[in-house]
Amino acid sequence: MRYSNYMFHVPDEKICRVIIDTDAANEGDDQFAAVHAMLSPRFDNVGFIAAHYGAENSMERSYDELLRLFSALECPFSGLIKKGAPHPLLSKSGPVVSEGSALIVEEAMKDDPRPLYVLFLGPLTDLASAYLQEPRIAGRFTAIWIGGGTYPYGNAEFNLGNDVNAANVFFSSKLELWQVPKNVYEMMGVSFAESSTGSVVKARQVIIFSRESLRRLIRKVPFEVRSGQGRLGSLEILLLSGLCYMSIGGSSIM
Image 1 (cartoon, rainbow, N blue to C red):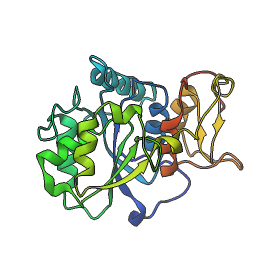
Image 2 (image 1 turned 45 degrees about the vertical axis):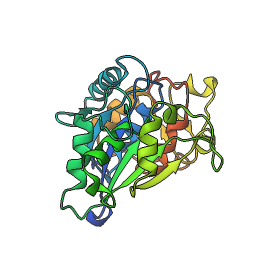
Image 3 (image 1 turned 135 degrees about the vertical axis):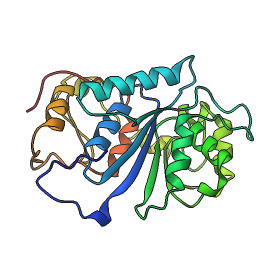
Image 4 (image 1 turned 180 degrees about the horizontal axis):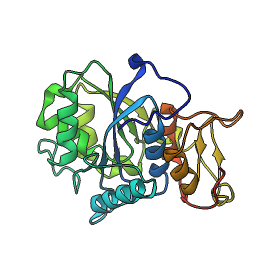
């Protein structure tokens, strides 16, 4: 899925394939990252994988949250949303096979010249499982992880703690990783006062819209980015996984 209803054209050589693995029901931050990915004219969104977050039935909750999000935006999602592992790895040698890990393997092994980025906004369970299923995927894509303790010394961190075995599998592999550790993503704090306006939050040239604004934006014609509001379609939006306690809703800014 690629949204391209803008007043500009993105050259084919700038298009990249993207898979987002998200524990969407855990907090309110991943929804913003997912929507910005949907709206980026550079991203060919191959799939969205629902991830667990350490609680019972949490993967199913993330799956339901993705369905709710796509439905609210009136965005077609047939075949796009996959179920990931329902729980962490039980060991460093046994994958938790799922639709999500199968999607990662399938897309990584494709003969496609466009670069592939697989984004993890929660634990690394599905990445580690994909690698254990098919080690040949190493070197065929770039993983981006919002997680891990404070760099460079490390410490406890939520996404890491939800599957330590998966992290150990990954860091023992030859998979390529861009990591956004805790001390980086925590810099993206937003106050209750800012988030309660329900309209727009500015952070490092990233715009966050209310649910109604996004619903109207995704189905109406070209959106004009106004001066001072930043721009859509940047990988910087992934840092929004560091935002906590955000709520979707409120009045429209359009």
